[in-house]
Length: 99
Image (cartoon, rainbow, N blue to C red; front, side, top):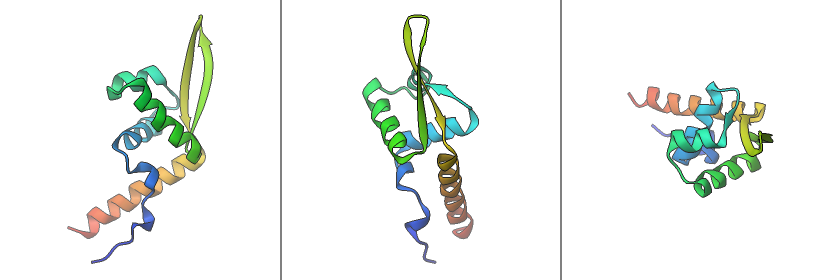
């Protein structure tokens, strides 16, 4: 059986970006430090993947101050929800058709 890779979104090839999107699909908003702690990644690694997802239009960042400390939180965009859902459906179809 043949399948097309056109159904899959390159933005979600990275394990970390897949995890980030999974978290954002179940949480309305999630902040940078919470991501860092939960995913056990460095600031730089997380920041580069977040920038990538922002450039694709799948994630939006929201910067604010909590007390005197800067805080960046993220939300998934409607385009991000649609793309991630489509990606997951393609993975599910692949699994169903190969059993």
